[in-house]
Each structure stands twice: as structure tokens, then as C-alpha cells.
Amino acid sequence: MKKAMEPRVCPSCQPINSPVTNYCGTCGHELSEQAVRDLESALRRIQQNPDFRFIREMADKGRNLA
Ligand SMILES: [Zn+2]
Image (cartoon, rainbow, N blue to C red):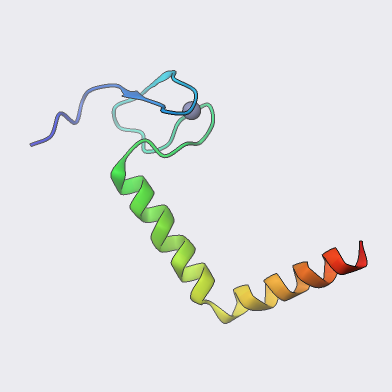
């Protein structure tokens, strides 16, 4: 069993966060391995989604117009 109830220190901005929070309340940095995994799998799902490619193409078109 890991020491789950220790306060979590944000590596980015340092304030001590609640032991049960997965993200820093100040900057949103992931504070747990689980949160990092969730974020990575969410990013993978987005990148594999055909709609995401469409959105990215739209964004590229927008940049070209700017
Ligand atoms: Zn932070």
C-alpha cells in the first residue's frame, strides 16, 4: 500500500495539494502517475480520432489565413 494520504507537492509551482487530488489546484499540473496516464491515454484517443485530424486541418487553414 502506497502512502496515499501524504500531501502532494506540485513539481511545477510547489504548493502542497490535497492527498486525494490528481491535479495541482494552482496550475493544473498532474500530481499522480494515474493522472499522467489518464492524460496520455486521452491524448492518444484524440490523436486517433478522425475528427481530431479534421479539427487540426481547420486549425492549419486558420493559421494560413492569419
Ligand atoms: Zn502547480
